[in-house]
Image 1 (cartoon, rainbow, N blue to C red):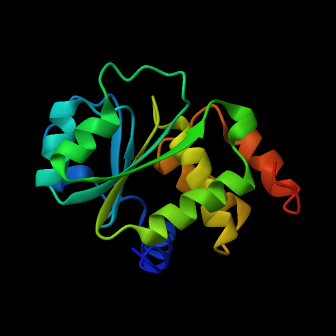
Image 2 (cartoon, rainbow, N blue to C red):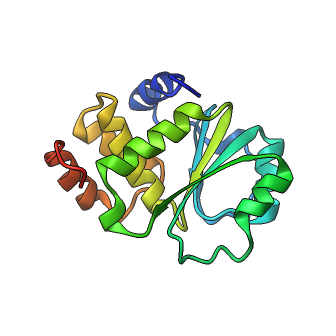
Length: 170
């Protein structure tokens, strides 16, 4: 994905999120196709992972905390399907930090092709993506809107706090 994420962010700011018309029907409670290279959402099932791979997803970035049960071994399933798999444990609001957004950015830059970024609901995924958007030069309001389009709900206040103190890792 390298620097290919900048254009989708700019397109999102102008046109809003791409609708998930190209994605197959999924069991995920929440799913958004943000750009041709980025899908966000809630916990995928094994069947969802198979469908997402068929739709071009090559990397899954799981933001769920270590103690959260997905109901199956997601990492093993990803390996069996030939998907790149990355975990960045975000257990809650305290882990929604500029530093973890930088880890997400690094993982996304290393990804080759379409990437799914998920947590349990999409809230943490959207929050970290909002921090990432701000780090790329988006205004706070545009970054917040981007985060909401990517699934952020209750973490907006936390993201705004983090963006008001950009020199810290919180």
